[in-house]
Image (cartoon, rainbow, N blue to C red; front, side, top):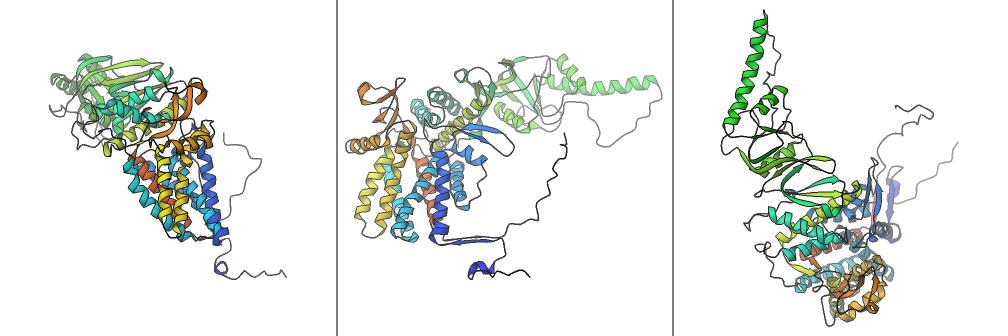
Length: 563
């Protein structure tokens, strides 16, 4: 008879076998903090312009080589609930702003690390959370006071193209440092081209398209006002200027009935007459299109051989698009209405385009819809590998999202860690004025901000302690002093900075170097990180039910593969 081992008393005794129950500081809180710290260690080395890439292979064995935190976290399957809370905060930042995801992970994890030392000192989680919330409130009051005055408004973005370009270059520089100036100018042109003149109209991120074409280098990338599609033209006509366009979602072919029909033909004459009626029907439809002035047809379905013959006869270009989304975007580009049935469109339903032509970029055939007054712009990206093109696409996506954030709130803050050092100084002063025990939590909250310029310096190979000391000393006179990566300035000698290929890594005035961060990005990133850290700290028990599901299927060793 087997010996029965009784369950330990307490909450765990009431649960099924296979369930997990953890409580207390050691089992729950410290473990949660440890999981968040380990998650942040993955993305810490990817932060900043000199951040290192990660090679991620997802569940379907697709390879990603990137330093974009949002892409890394999206592709890895994290199970730990506390780490998931931090990932959800990062995901919310991605959805709200589209940039600053790594900032949320780093700041939240460092907050938890600092909270751990307070817990070991004897403070309770609720006291630390209260202190963090007080510090967050003070930070929200302080952030707008650091604004760099640029007289930038939603209405005058077109007049300040250089400043807008510098803001977008900061976003691109964190992914593709070295190409940030070239790509920043390209993205600025593309975004301003599709921004409505009316200040009340909102900017749509989907209006800036990206067409990735393998070959060449990034510096061969261009902006096209309109759409660029990796397709071939169906008809013989390959170029049309001042095009009048009809867009159909149906096939361009002989109309057939939905039900099966039987035709009884008694002689050869009847057979000839039957086919002639079909020909006459499709010819009359295409002839009516040509008489209406239409010289280009865009179809979402197939173009039949008979229809193609008459399209060539009447000198009409035919373009077939397989994606219904591309069809809608082309219609938006040329101001046309997508028609569900083959008929002659009215004047309002027709689209107009300056020129439509087929071109060959590298070895890829593309159809270009070029229209000066288009609501859509396309960035044609060139690159030597798919990984470079994908990384470039992610950097441009961040820049376009930054432009959208700029249209929401054009307030700019000093970049390069200057804002963080100023916040650390001001919050430390505020902590000393607080009489309660929360002052320790506020002081640790202030110290957390030092982590951002410290990581920027460490990832660039510079001694972070020296940089932090210089920043703290310099901020007494200049609140815009930050960590700057760039060419040597006239006032800086070679002995003053660590040099590598004529690039310096040192402190400098970020206003002179035109290194700007968006206020709205920083505000939401700090808010999400703080709330996530407080949520993790407020958990004192973890209760995991027994996982669902039966036994795992038996492995058939030695069997042949299906292929």
